[in-house]
Length: 189
Image (cartoon, rainbow, N blue to C red; front, side, top):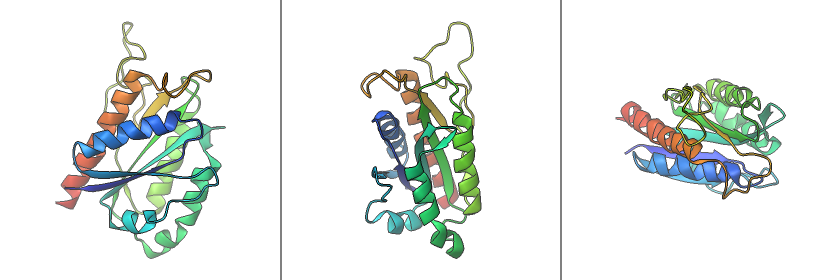
């Protein structure tokens, strides 16, 4: 079974809820574990060793000001020793993000993660879901945001983590986690 390590930052709890859906999806197709970056930008003990052993890594951050949160950026910067030693080369990578707005420049955040993965020599797994873009579609539908690079979610600014992300975004996140794990399994076989 492929081993997937999911590392993310969440300040308000919305991205944590999305991360949980990604985890459950990844666990449906492999072994997966969730790692939360602290408010101070500290990576949990043990993550680096497990990430080096993993078949795939999935990155998560809310979108703040058209990019990842500084806590996630600190993690990315601290990965430079792995970059130098090519520890993550040819692993599968994926990413997810969440913001209050429908667009909210989430694509820029996923492009940052995709570039970060590329610098490490990783292979990026796209969302692989058709957009729910017909008149009858809405927030309860999978990939209502219409992304393709990774899983995107909307959590209105006044919504609690129990209220958002909405069911369609969580289904999209679950399916994305399963897709990344299943694809990593094909590479690691």
